[in-house]
Length: 381
Ligand code: GDP
Ligand code: ZN
Image 1 (tube, rainbow, N blue to C red):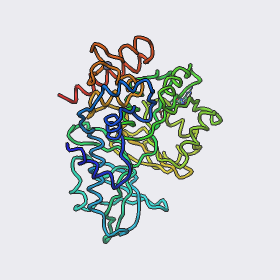
Image 2 (cartoon, rainbow, N blue to C red; image 1 turned 180 degrees about the vertical axis):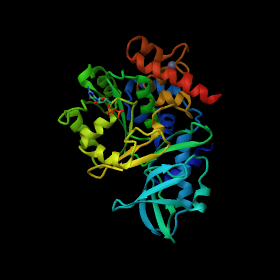
Image 3 (tube, rainbow, N blue to C red; image 1 turned 120 degrees about the horizontal axis):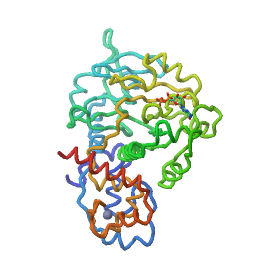
Image 4 (spheres, helix red, strand yellow; image 1 turned 90 degrees about the vertical axis):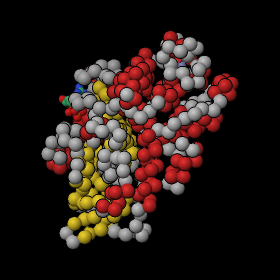
């Protein structure tokens, strides 16, 4: 696509986002992804790198396009009342007003018809304008999104399933034991966050059951904020630190069943689970339906529960994108002999060399390989 095409859409709504920004930075000056350090001795390697043909990540294109389309549909500035989308399930959207009142609302046809290519026009976290028409609430405008978490729809891969919009943080939870730590899940979730420009946080739970330090060290070393917690202890320093981080923020929790997400929410915000449970009869993280929902946390934050986050299968990225979004691989990428190196069997691969020297964790490389060989290969077919 022409270089300026996408920029037109996003320029009006703020800085360049996510992977597109990384790619451009990488193209222009060979900078490392996501604020990762660039060492002076690499200058020569960046020279060699030269220009690269890059396709644009589908997720970012979608966000830019969505924002363009909703902008076209913005009604005379402040028509209607402001509300946020707090529940999305097939055929049903619920909005929440500033005073906490919740009510079902229907999106105006003219607005909905403009937004295609997605499974769900609206996502939890969308800021909307609503007007009352007879008995019903109509959504007449949508604010441009700051960011979104999305994956391709499980049933129709041509469609994007937007899990949540305007997310402050993706909290990735993994236990030291019971269930055992799964680097593949953690690395996919962190990649998904990075590709969508959503800040991530890794929480290693059940630190009372084993040694969390190696994991904390590994991920902190990659530049991710990381906490070890014992969620059964409200005075746990990790729990307190997490509570402080989450105050006032809209967050999505990702983690396999049983890692302690509910316990963690309860430890951070005593009584929150009871309240959440009262709204969602199945309880937080328990439902098997396709509904996504947000809950107001004490202190004004939002907890977004979205079943789609449970299996983090990566699609719509190129192997090169994945390598750029893995800080530990991105570091070496410019030193590989071939600039389109996928770090598998290519000769002169700096990533393979770093792996052999122990400078890349085997679990990280294994995640990378499994993502490009399985998730992406499946997508391509
Ligand atoms: P979720 O499925 O991720 O919401 O996990 P839960 O919060 O329901 O926790 C699953 C089980 O792990 C429960 O029996 C909890 O009591 C237990 N659990 C949660 N956090 C911890 C922890 O930090 N340490 C220990 N030992 N057990 C925990
Ligand atoms: Zn390589």
